[in-house]
Length: 397
Image 1 (tube, rainbow, N blue to C red):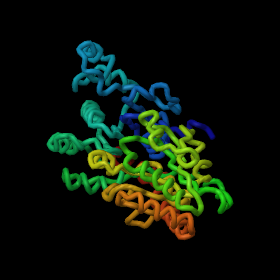
Image 2: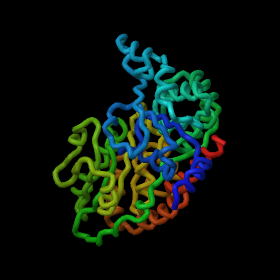
Image 3: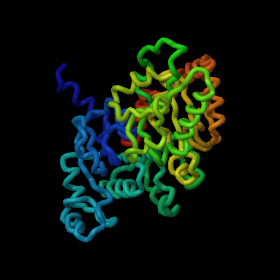
Image 4: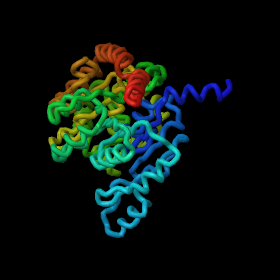
């Protein structure tokens, strides 16, 4: 087909988007995966992208026009001059108009879209939108406002043209806190998760495989993952079909998994590529998602839905959620009966569940099949992306 016939339709149907985020689209974490899904099919020449985390500078960038925007920069005095000269975008809360003009040259944004977990990133995006005179669409993925002054947050939200959140729990919390309603755009599962490799043939002699697949963060998952590890060991001492807990993914801080490892029962397999996740899921009997019971960290993490939840539910594998009430993930699964959810911290309850699961997994497989049907309707990346992009079109019109 003649490209000259295609280009005008792209010009009409897709506005120019300036994305501002902590991480680049496609990064191997929840933010990167979610952004890639939301903007599936958006013409790459109609996206310019500012990101501010230095650890992603060497990441392959999918042919997009990425610009590293270190916000915040070091507050040291020697960093003031580069900002005033327009070599960096920020210093001590001051922003460089010279840097902005240089980095939007040749690109005329129709709107500014920020996908964030940091108040400093929101402030920068707010300033950029004001400088360009274009609407600012804010999508909050993790809690950035927990320690912020309510008046500051309220003023910032009043300037935002459209406000998106990642979960219904976040939407309710922010409406109660700031009186500003939002639309929910969660991180959906890509099509391949709905068609994982064939389930392994059941073998009553081999251990039941519990698998955690994702980055294990000490602050987010401990006070939970060690309970699951202890339950596996106690279950195995009770006789019957044994169980193993296998952890696949990164760990932060490095070495934190060593706190719970036990030879032959609790194993850590390290990082895996994104394209290995489906085969890893296929080898599991039960997928586990732990959340911290620490009260302080709970408040910081409770409003988000981890990318792994829609992906796990989409596969039709049984899922165990272990974490306190009031989290977006547990709220969602309890409301729609999508997984086994244990909200009280109790190793004996975990042991009881493991005994029931290893003795008869059929009820849990039936629940997983129902969860997969729900995920197809409500948690697919395709459906979420279509709704999201239609919204951006209306805002930019």
